[in-house]
Amino acid sequence: MLNVYADFCEQVLAIPVIRGKKTDKEKFAGAEATYTIEALMHDGKALQSGTSHNFGDGFAKAFGIQYTDKDNTLKYVHQTYWGMTTRLIGAVIMVHGDDSGLVLPPLVAPVQVMIVPVRQKAEGVLEKAFEIKDQLSQFRVKVDDSDKSPGWKFSECEMRGIPLRIEIGPKDIEEGKCVLVRRDTREKIECPLDQMETMIAELLEKIQKDMLEHARNHREQHTYTAQTMEEFENIFAEKTGFVKAMWCGDRACEDAIKEKLSVSSRCMPFEQEHITDTCICCGKPAVKMVYWGKAY
Ligand SMILES: [Zn+2]
Image (cartoon, rainbow, N blue to C red; front, side):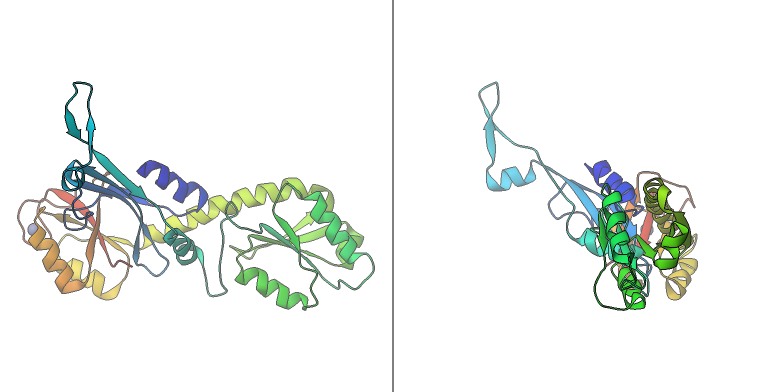
């Protein structure tokens, strides 16, 4: 299930995640094991983005949940519990948003393309805008034909995170083109009116990929490696993000780190790396490489 969540985050929400196991301190109380995907928000804080728990038969024993097995004896069920919640909406806002507002990945944007007519009172402009809307019926498209000024409409599109907007005025119509503006990069692209379907399909796909890439680069740039406690403390004093460091497996070290730096172990990634032989905190032999961070 964790991989289903991870694929959804990466392929649909354009949020890169780290897959791993929680330490005993951070796991679901009473579970045998908790698996997690962890994402880094724009401000460098970590967000647990989906979890999958193995309950074993502990809860079944506590609540008397039994079944009759084929050998006709009563046995306790083994349970799992997994969840990905509305907090992912927050993650989309916090990973991709900027000072102008939302930036939504095309696959989940309620409106993928907004057509903004320029000088919409001029003859034929609104008609053309609605004609384009019909032409683009394979996408989620709207025309903003309100009385607000074009500048207002452009800002509103940005604030709402609409992946692409189309600007079209009398001069464009004369020249048989329009202007496409990407929300993520704000790049302006001229588009011949007879090539709109293909260009927009390609662009939406590109925006989706670029947003994941952009978020991945941001995470890479805010992921650090610490070999000593001094380094570890200095990084968290000056920066925000993930820090990779070795750990001995002892709860006391996790507690000490949390107490001192308000930093928690985010996960022991499935893809382990070797940084040093010893625990960052106590110097005893290390058993796992852990991602540490400040959590929401
Ligand atoms: Zn230790």
